[in-house]
Image 1 (spheres, one colour):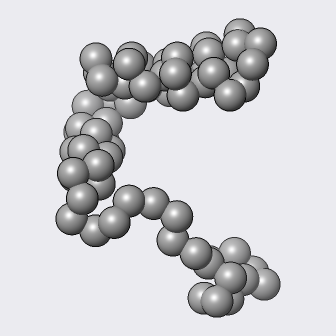
Image 2 (cartoon, helix red, strand yellow):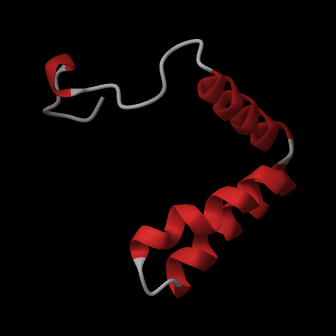
Length: 70
C-alpha cells in the first residue's frame, strides 16, 4: 500500500466476488500472464485508441469488442 494510505482510504471498486464478470477478468489476466504475446497485443490495443480517439468517453466502446477477440 502506498505511503500515507490506510485501509480506510482503500475502496474496492470492482466486480463482486463470484460474478461472471470477475471470472472473465481473472481468466483474461491469467491468459495474459501465461502468454506474453497476448499481453503485448492487449497493451497495444489499449495504447492505440487512447492516442487517436477524439472523445475519451468512446474508449470503452472501441476497446471492449477487440478484447473479446483476444
